[in-house]
Amino acid sequence: MLTVKVEARPGLAADSAAAKKAAQTLAHEIKTYIGSSADIEVLGEGGVERSMGKAKRVVDLR
Image 1 (tube, rainbow, N blue to C red):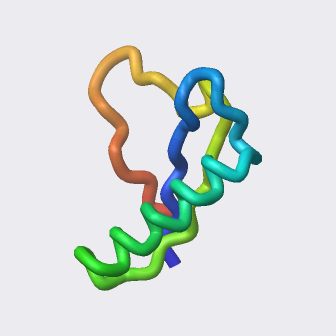
Image 2 (cartoon, rainbow, N blue to C red):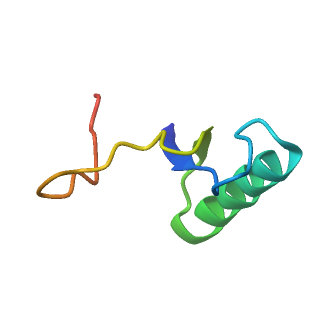
């Protein structure tokens, strides 16, 4: 299964009801448009690492 890590909006807790609803919506959209199920992990503000150079878009942990 694909794991997608996303960062909550500033001021929104990662474990809030709004964040969980957004994660469910995103998982549904990914399934609809790509056809693959995704596990959405909502992180707190600053939880997604920022790159200092070339973008690191995909991490393949196979």
